Image 1 (cartoon, rainbow, N blue to C red):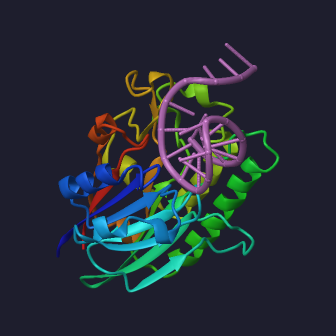
Image 2: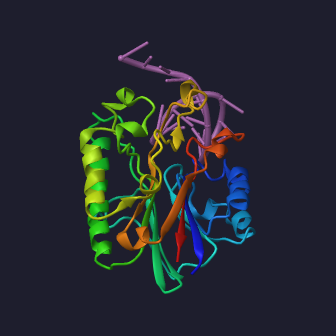
Image 3: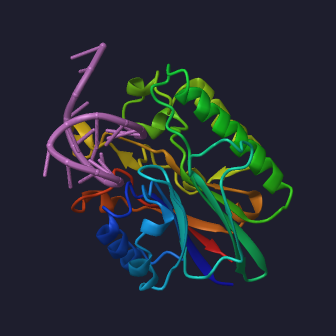
Length: 264
DNA sequence: ATGCCCCCGGTTCGGGGA
């Protein structure tokens, strides 16, 4: 039995954030780190700096925006890029790695769920809901494997009113609309557990503070970065943490790492 | 009601995002 630390962090531009990322890898020492919004093509990803810290790097990038990555101390046996269900979807928002651990495997997904705003946009909000339906279908398929599976990422979903400083600010927002929260609950109803809420009664808890209007200074945050666990993964969960100290660093991302400790 | 602020690509601003 060994402990594994698995983290998710929306880095908001890996090239702009490489110093913060390397410092965090050294300090926090995750076994697997799921990154979102790398905003880089695969060839432009600063892999050498990260490999020098002992990490294997797998990316699924695109030009300018979106993009996800998996950094891991052990090399994955298998990597899958792109969320199934729409061959025409060009947006790089999903990468899955399969890792060998004691007694079997763990599957880890780094996902960047569409924001969906403005919520009355004829394209953006329907795309978000369609993406969530595809994620649900993927999760249902994977659930049949009865393996430890961690769906980690920036969900752009505020699950409950107590996951926002001021929920009244969010009632017409794509992150908090009833349809968005219902789609998130459908994922939970498949048997996936919100790791942070399973291990922590504290309210509110935030993982994102907007750059604008002094949101960090006012602690006007929301909790939108989640580790969703299959039953086999939640059996292994021991604790979680939100590493909010990195939000106070120079040139921060607007999100902070959310981590889980697992006994494998 | 709107913008606040940020990153990228490429160039001193527009596109895109949140």
